[in-house]
Length: 108
Image (cartoon, rainbow, N blue to C red):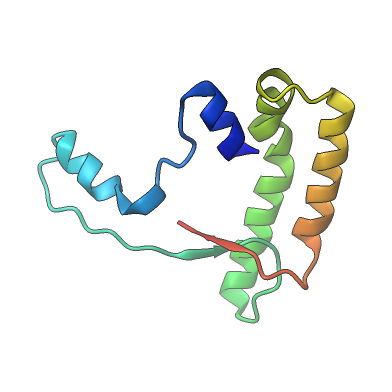
């Protein structure tokens, strides 16, 4: 959905794509050394390690509560979906995010 909306609006949502952050900081005039580290941020409580289980729980809560803010405008105004279609999509997404069989994470 975000990829399709970014094409239609001519703006990318992949600002951390392809490890460009460090280079962008240098181009922006950041004077110091730029050190980059990538973390795998879990989504949900599936990790076995207590620390990452807690991180995943907070990440899940953040994502669940932010779904409408992330996608409602793009879905309805840019992609032409109805409000009802978006609500169904968000409900399905919430169920999938809570499914412990899916070991979802994203780089951070």
